[in-house]
Image 1 (cartoon, one colour):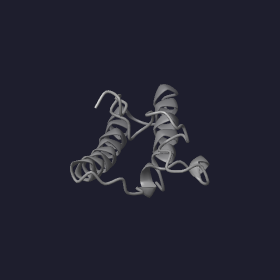
Image 2: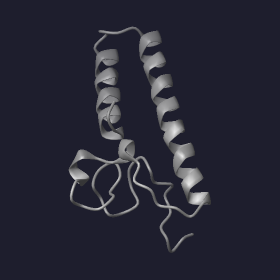
Image 3: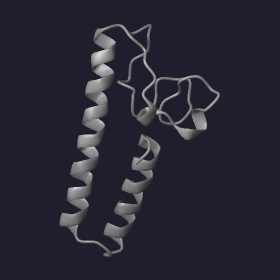
Image 4: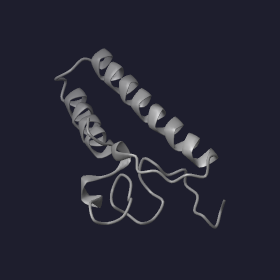
Length: 93
């Protein structure tokens, strides 16, 4: 996976395959487990930089659509949405 958008797409395909009976539930569970570990790793990285009050560019969180649009994460939205969001805005913090 090059970014979280690709992971989301892959998980959606896995869900469809599971619903269609093309893969076993155990296989889907293992893929979901690995995806969770990838997301957890990115979350730790984001939290580390937040503690240091840094705003680095984390390529895995960036959407290919975000090229040329600043540092939008997981969907090129300037709002705090996508994989890197914790549901708060700068005003909330």
